[in-house]
Image (cartoon, rainbow, N blue to C red; front, side, top):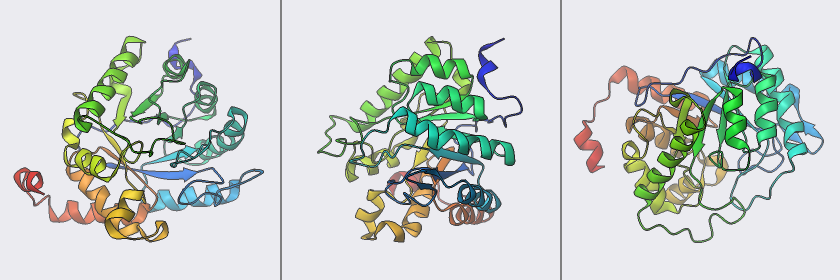
Length: 298
């Protein structure tokens, strides 16, 4: 059996987008945690996932236009504490199994743990979305063995401390160099280059100025030929720019998703699927009016 044997039979395969394609794919966020910054507890109780709610919510996301579902069992908000592997498995695997069985949409698992990666692949996941870019011991080997698509994200530090005065000499160069090095490490370990995506990690060890600089220079961050996934939805930067509380950040989040799409993001990871899909549909119908020169001056 080949390296793809770990993936569940009949699982929906994930077709990676072409870098810079418009409109981008829309990834719906399903936080199976009691403590995520935006919606913790809605889909997960202290005793485990609320499967009925999860399935209903996933169905609404797909009806609204989600191209894939991202399931995570560990909160990585600023200040979050680590989650035991057993707890993460108990939260994530029943959800991945239920979604993969019911819906013709790829399921991504948001995890840094090799055991969770392997179990999720067996349960029907199509993608691994790792905020630590496969840097934990055994993560690269586990990801290679699944044969799944992988998104590698940049994070400075760990969630518990990452927002304690992050500093960069040159945030564009440093994030780009990190992502290029992680892509090279994965390819050297036997992963197919065309199964990789990268994420600059907005809000993960970055202040508002860093985040805005990365968004403005998004096309310069990814290694050649690698699609970019962007997660800006409801984050602190939206609140800093608008003064809005977490539950009131839908309009700012949609604006940032559109700004990222216009700068080449191939996947946008969002809480508000319908609003994001509507904005992308309108922009697609009207046409991408601003020239690249206009965007560079924005």
